Image 1 (cartoon, rainbow, N blue to C red):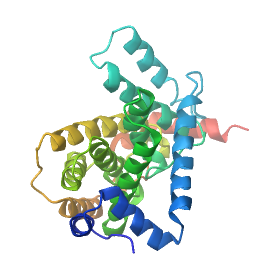
Image 2: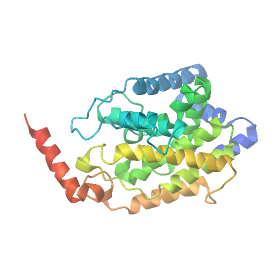
Image 3: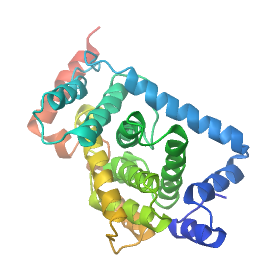
Image 4: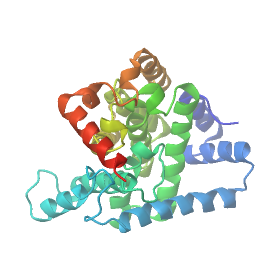
Amino acid sequence: MAFSSVSSMLDACKQSGRPLYEVILESDLAESGLTRAESEAEMRRLWGVICATSAGYCGADRSMSGYAGGDAAKVAQAAGEGRLYADGYFAEVIAEALKTAECNACMKRIVAAPTAGSCGVLPAVLLPLFRAGRADEDAVCRALYVAAGFGQVVAARATLAGAEGGCQAEVGAASAMAAAALTVLKNGTPEQAAEAFAMALTNLEGLVCDPVAGLVEIPCVKRNVIGAMNAVSAADMALAGVVGHIPADEVIDAMAEVGNAMSHELRETGIGGLAGTPTGCKIRDAVTRGFDTP
């Protein structure tokens, strides 16, 4: 059966002496009924889609509303010209997060990881490492199993839907999953992966879901960047031995409590927060008129 707590995953690792991804993969096989070969082939297929999405990005593409598209190209160009604080891996993380999130807004094929609105976070932290030869496909897929295992626990204990728990449940969870994935990719321990996960989710606790005009464009695309950079920071802290003091399961439970306490206007209704600002309302009205035009 799938794990319902991070602590049970860690206990399984201790008792068996096996790597975290192996414990999670075995649990997945028991639940899905797939063979190991079938499961691994599916994970490679998903990674292939992630790579293809990034490779197929076009800076000239725009979403139907016109409010999303082209930003990843701007970041890549500025980084190449040395105009940014970020360079190397960090500049690539920013650009890749924008790429996938923009492709989602432009109705292209993406992998919801764990949701469409947070689809840019995991690709952002993994693709630059893969392309630079710092992680091969096997290592990336093992990291993706770890991310999926932690994400499953969030789904079991709380929610991954912005409509239920706010953006903390989408970008927050994606960021925490990515942090855990990065930690194991750098040979961190299962305990360090759990710490990275907990710190990343803690950092985004309380993040509301307030899409302008109800579209996953403003501010969602840019929040993928924050989720990705937060994941790298949390993974590095955990690898350095930093701890967040609140266990991962308790952080997930706290996130669920905060989500339940949120007003419905702040849970993907397109009413409150940024969606309710004067400019947000103007954008909503302009988008609505545009969509209503024959």
